[in-house]
Image 1 (tube, rainbow, N blue to C red):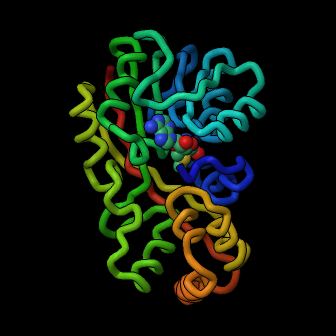
Image 2 (image 1 turned 90 degrees about the vertical axis):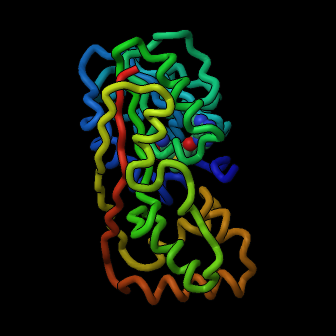
Length: 253
Ligand SMILES: C[S@@+](CC[C@H](N)C(=O)[O-])C[C@H]1O[C@@H](n2cnc3c(N)ncnc32)[C@H](O)[C@@H]1O
């Protein structure tokens, strides 16, 4: 998958949004002193870092199926229990944690309902399962939405990430209900990242991260030049900010 990339590439591409998102998501999920937490699909550790800050390193575990991200997260958090595993098959016993969280992961799961159900299994009864996914639906408000808009302008038939599960309004709550969670609440979280200029924005798309990076990597030079030119038309030349909004859901195991 397009997540077997370096932590540095991920950080420049998505970490600049997922690090601030982790602060908002942890607060919205009700992370509280004394809890044991699991970060599912931790990547290089944006949410893991926030959980360690709030709960302490001995209260936090993490998993991710990407070998390069697991290696990066282990280097960043020595001593933390970080396993190479997917949400659909977590290497934890039943009721092992108070809180299982998945930030920007549900839409990449092979089986999102099975993944959320498995997160509920490893959470103690009454504990919290929480997830968030960028708004990828109509009027998308994800960090990568402008790139997909430019792709669509040049190649109207290309769908991008618009149909991934959990990315539309209300979809995360439907998935959470199908996974058997109780007392489901949903909402949205918005973060902002600053870019010095157009190249600061474009360069991370050339690093092959995620579906957008994979799309750019699959273009020939002419296609890449055309896409870059279309994006340039859509963005200001000087310093600018991009805001991005994620849907979030939480429920009781
Ligand atoms: C957009 S990144 C999010 C990483 C991190 N949570 C963050 O907020 O920066 C998506 C992550 O989901 C992981 N992933 C993909 N499929 C998964 C699955 N079935 N179960 C758990 N994680 C998965 C990828 O390896 C990648 O690290």
